[in-house]
Image: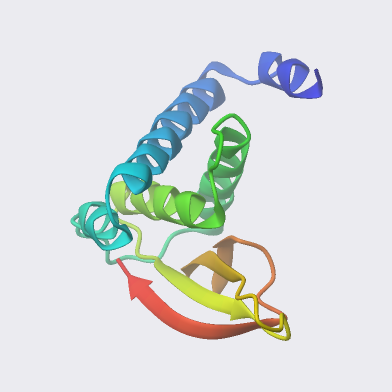
Length: 138
C-alpha cells in the first residue's frame, strides 16, 4: 500500500520517468529470459555514451530503476544494471557493469552485478564481501 501512496505523490515528470524505467526494466527482463546476456548487453551498449553523468542523473536513474524493479518479477541485479546502463547511455552518459562473486560462500557461487559510473556505484549496493570478476563498459 505504501508504494501506491508514494506513486500518487509523484510529479508528472517523475511519473513519466518512472514509466520509462518500468518499460526498460521489463524489456531487459524479458530479453534476458529469451536471449543470452551477451546479446542483451550488445543491444544495450550500442549507444555512444562517453561523458560522465552528473550525480543528479545517477540518483535519478538509480531511483527510477530500483522503483520500477519492484513491479517487475525477477528483476535481478543484472536486469537492473543493464536497464540503468541503457537509460544512462540514452543521455550520452558512460557507465560499466561490474560482476563479482560473493566471498566465502563455500561450494555455492553467488554472483552479483553493479552499475558503475566513474567511481560511483549507481545500482547494486556495496561491493564489500565480493570478489571482482569482470567489467563490461558502455
